[in-house]
Length: 137
Image (cartoon, rainbow, N blue to C red; front, top):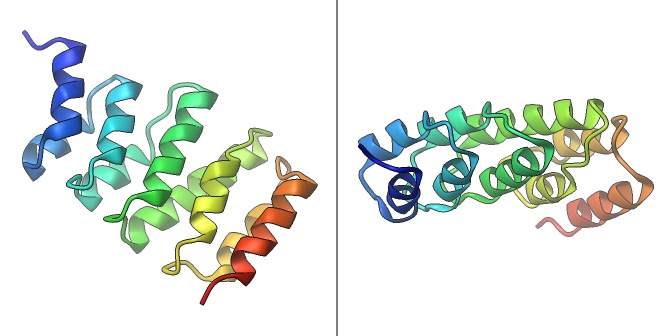
């Protein structure tokens, strides 16, 4: 019987797409975060992880990792954008994920800029968001 440590080790080091997709259904948020940091995790698993929820801290960390993932395609990034918007509307502060999304050229600047107008966005976040978006090439 695999232990949570076994799942975590696989999530960190595995490069088999089928195994990584199965691990995305694991109930442990630390495994989700390891998957989101693994460059071999396929977009379908990343998309599934964009819907995973545990606690504010774990969710915000996961969303940031997903936004930064090099293999995140437009579908994944838009799912993360929607999840971040929902968190902001709830009054949470997934600010690192907002700024990571601002760096993703796959998303339109206006799509990301709208996050600054949501309930949980602070004046400082709006300033940093505007700055990040202005640095795009």
